Image 1 (cartoon, helix red, strand yellow):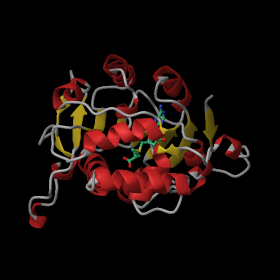
Image 2 (tube, protein in one colour):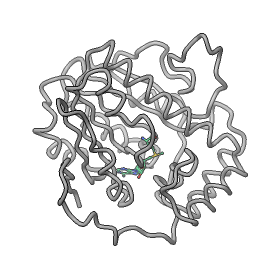
Image 3 (cartoon, protein in one colour):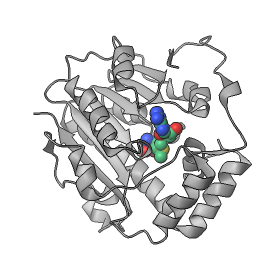
Image 4 (cartoon, rainbow, N blue to C red):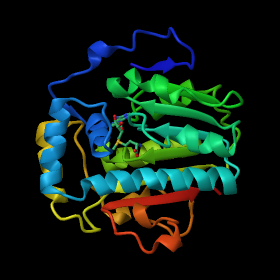
Length: 275
Ligand SMILES: C[S@@+](CC[C@H](N)C(=O)[O-])C[C@H]1O[C@@H](n2cnc3c(N)ncnc32)[C@H](O)[C@@H]1O
């Protein structure tokens, strides 16, 4: 089911009945690791158990959000991007995509996409964008890129560059060929100068306990997750011009050098531009 939430009140009862409080959900556990309040006891229990197995998971979540802030700043301020399609948005937190982008360029247009009913229920908090720009929320599944593309128009003008932001989401598309097809479908629909932004968990960058933590997740929470190698993640960016410094731990992607070398996190990050 796909539904659009426009930035004015009265659209739908937000489908709270779809929210399950007996099974841990990724968006809510991620929110717990980010020290948010929009989660249930089952999410905290699973999240804390995973932290016990894999103590740096909270650092991964925070490094991923910091990466988002640096990338959106870079794309808006230095690359002139004025449209973002943020798929796998997560629950509203500090420095959401529209806040970072519209602070620099108030006319920026953002469409958020997630399929978790709790994110839909809180989406109003994402729809507080600038008067000059547009912020919209789409309740949709990343497995249906064609449907997403149909739904984002006319909010996004697909003849102008778009940053397709996929942070911590392709890891929920378990089949690598399908994940590649999703990315290709999205990037084929946007013009030259568009960007793909990816973060993805891996077992290659340390992160003691990560494999066991993911196995625990897959037995106790939803949706199921997979890690990938750097080569597999790089294949999502095939045909794009990879922005320096390439595919790296997301903590080390264009970090502030005055703060020294941040610790590695077991989450790759990269940005590629469509030639
Ligand atoms: C790890 S969180 C990342 C949130 C945010 N992008 C960030 O980097 O902080 C992954 C998000 O993807 C969403 N998600 C998972 N599978 C999805 C799917 N098939 N379609 C849309 N969203 C999905 C989850 O609900 C969750 O909000």
